[in-house]
Length: 197
Image 1 (cartoon, rainbow, N blue to C red):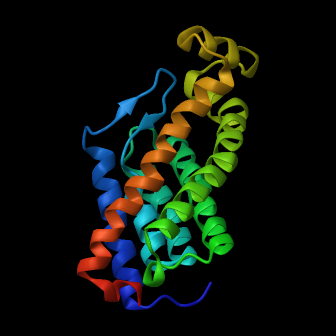
Image 2: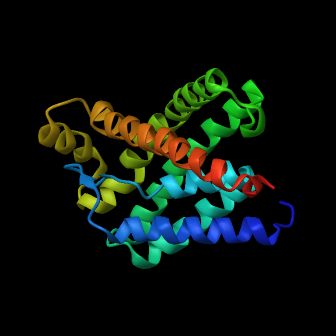
């Protein structure tokens, strides 16, 4: 990782503060098994879009630390949120490289192509990762059930297969993360274009 300049540090700090504020505000929709659909990752996505992959990765790591301290879900929820957000960042970065996307020269068509590709790559990473982490780590701890009973319990509560119960809310959360993150970043860049460096 290279050295960050003061602009990048300021952007990451502001966005991290917003993320943590969204964590404590009651602006979420909880699922039956513990995940919340919320706006917490949106400022982290904005930090990535404004500072690049290293800045986004730094913001994700700081999000883990911050959520571990303030979240009612402790380190476990922080780990899950940070890991899921990292999957979204990977989708955005892979899409950026495949499409050569840049805000400086992006038209509407390029933005749509970039965002859709980022979303689909992101969920292709996020959903299997979250299904595995929920099965092997998180839900066993969170629910206090033996691993053998986790799938049955979640399917009983939700009425759908385990992978759907985990995958669908993560796909919905990714829509918020990618598209709200982009829609929130574009007006910022129009008003303060030098934020891109």
